[in-house]
Image (tube, rainbow, N blue to C red; front, side, top):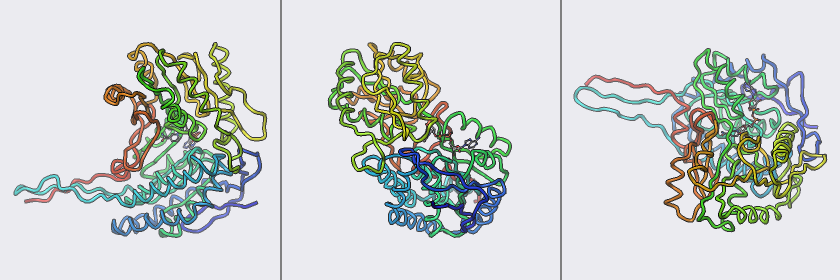
Length: 470
Ligand code: NAD
């Protein structure tokens, strides 16, 4: 069984303890995760701090070249990364699975390489010149979740190093191995200490978020953990980007065509088995086409094969872990107990593997866990409405505000409703289609700040205004 190792100051590091990483399809051990101690975390931060001045002093073009070279290296190693990802995360190798995720990692990395933050001139008059300089922050701590671990690691690391920061990344203990491999690949390009990885228990996360030598934390994960990160980062007033949980609503207007939108609705909700921050998690459908949308979704779902991610015909894999499996099971049970109607699925399969079928739940409303909370799994509640104002009010009746969508044959009408949705991204006749040039982030308790594009890159910097006399 392969023992993976930490990577600190460009050097693989052993730990005294290792933990099994399990394949959620089979329960078999995929590899051994090194369990870092506080001492290891201290060394990783010291290594990033030591590497910072040299990396920050490189020219923007040199750093762009390095990030671009990383994209090429990820691409070269794509199949190995994708296989490891499927084994530890569960998602299928093909389809919208691991190869897709690694492709996304390459695309985001390449796009980030192409960005630049030149000095901006705010004023240039006889009285004087004012320039806006963007400077790297220092050591960035990256903390990632288990749903899209490689792509999210790239979302954190690439803009951080592109802007001249150095990084210590701590992936989720559920899916650490593909990120270790990613960091090894990155280290073939960047100088020692620019990107370090520590893996192990959650406590490492709070060690990073409270450490005085960490200047910024970029965190992707649940809202409850995000609150803890914010609290712990407050003592040293760290910069924060928090990408937190979502409970995205989609509104289907009366003029939509159920058959035409079924595929988009399905993948909006069930991408990565619903284990996606900006997945469609509550669907509001007008009374006049409620049955048509339910039928079209049931028909589409009938052709979806759930199975071991390594099998060629699997379109969806298992849930990644027992905790998520239990949450989804309990939310569906609660819905049924409150009178909701299961259109398909609803009965978890017995192990091995955390397999839960695609589940569509009708005749359900607010007041059930499946609607009010983030299910983060393959169970979609379909809520009936008769007045679009009521649908908008219900969609916005959430402490989350990550994504949203409007489905209609009339784009102008859809745009007007989209503008009223309280969320950081909103799509028309689509849901969750993020792209590297469009800022992505949550409003309300779905997060602080944005990632991607120029706006995301700027978050990896501090501003210095420079006043030059005339
Ligand atoms: P989680 O909050 O349990 O864990 C996320 C990371 O935080 C892990 O690496 C974990 O080890 C670490 N951690 C745990 N306790 C910590 C602490 N006290 N201090 C610092 N770090 C700590 O989330 P998860 O279950 O891994 O991921 C699922 C959640 O992530 C969902 O809510 C999902 O919506 C959200 N998510 C959001 C986005 C986004 O971009 N907004 C993207 C993906 C996932």
